[in-house]
Image (cartoon, rainbow, N blue to C red):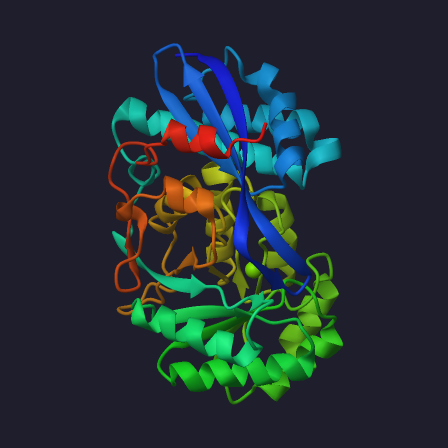
Length: 376
Ligand SMILES: [Mg+2]
């Protein structure tokens, strides 16, 4: 079998209700998809976390190197592409592109052998995973506390037993918001916070102490991703477990985080950190270091399905009668493209998502939807 074509799609969908996180406002959602065709007639789909035109540019750059290659020799393709560009692209859009290619190749491999990706890779270790509601952003309309209470109540009504809220808007405002959400959801629902790297270590530590009665399950990206010393300081000087890594890439990037024990929970994104091939390695490395792995997921049906197959492969922390289950991040914000591509099989029911069982990723891509949102 040989690769005959690699097509890229940049999709965009405006938001009805723009939202803010700690570093700015979002008024649209986008998606970068890749479609790889073979001379056997098999097609594989992949998705890159971002960023839009840069990831598309990287995909177009590597396209000529893929034509004619054996799509089943995924490690070889990964190594060849990484080796070719590593001096200028060991992090960022090239690895996002490589992630999308790797996911599409595993989709092809699964369809070729008529098995879901997680079975080809040695799974499943589990057939379903609990999902957490990821949301609780800021909006222009309404007051902050009322919006947070209403949204948290919606997540509870849908059956989620865990949710994550945005912080990074100022220590006092954050403390008030976190206390409001904790009061709304009661004590048996897990609550995580995410600053998206907006704080320095001083303010991250101040916030953590201001909310030490809120039983926060993890503090995500308290400081910018490149501030490893800051992560170590936050870890050492406050009680909340520290998470991060959605902006890190490949086994080589995570090696340094793990070796320095800079995070309690790493959160690679399968559409950014290097795809299935690489994320399996990263998770196994984390396991060897005794550090938890909880995937970051922020995309369409392809990203969600890929994350679910990977979640089926994550080693338990630890090998106990009652291991700590890994969680699926379920993006609860508006996303027209995701909603149009999603099928019910991928949606969590009562806060639990099933691992897909159809060959490959188990996702059918509706070309009408791709055409509708395509901007390039
Ligand atoms: Mg995050």
